[in-house]
Amino acid sequence: ETGVTQSPTHLIKTRGQQVTLRCSSQSGHNTVSWYQQALGQGPQFIFQYYREEENGRGNFPPRFSGLQFPNYSSELNVNALELDDSALYLCASSLRRVGGPWEQYFGPGTRLTVT
Amino acid sequence: AQSVAQPEDQVNVAEGNPLTVKCTYSVSGNPYLFWYVQYPNRGLQFLLKYITGDNLVKGSYGFEAEFNKSQTSFHLKKPSALVSDSALYFCAVNYGNMLTFGGGTRLMVKP
Image (cartoon, rainbow over all chains, first blue to last red; front, side, top):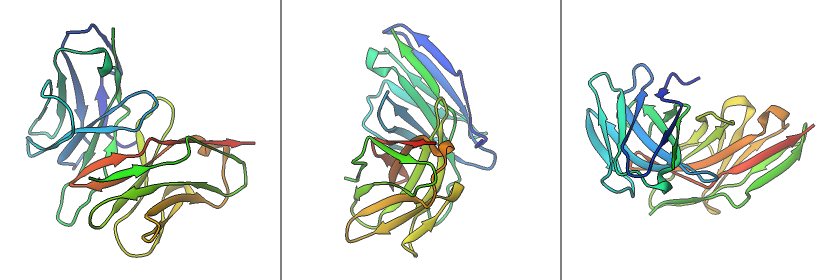
């Protein structure tokens, strides 16, 4: 196990609702990245947080937003849920240091179903 | 833009035989390449990475990968497959601290 935890494990929401997913990073790690993995596909990068600020974003609309807290844990918020948001959401933590790139260690994911 | 391709959706191999899972990449600049494995209802587990240096990279669980710059490939290999190696394998390229993944290859190892 990587030491990265995510909650909840599963979640069912209705189209138009809002959802918050949570991630606790591995001890000693200072960077958190979020990925969306649709069924049968590879993960897609949503965004990354370092020192509580967004540090890179993939091709996702603004209704996907996030936070990183002083203890390096993180939240992913999705507003106005759409059916296509149904996916496994993966959090990955890493230790950002000089000389990158840094291995990212993934949590077990949150399975979101939008009906 | 960077991209990764895994040309095989599934690879079947008998236990004890060598296995290869293929990956090709397209990046500008030096490639930073990774392999991850995903078991059912689990997150991704890091297997190995190529940053620079030797073209043959050794990783976890007896896996290794061969970097070939001229063919822009980074194939995952194991000399002797185990049934427990059956899982979904992802190749990824790191660019700007963002991982771009291939579509994945399902490895089936039969007893």
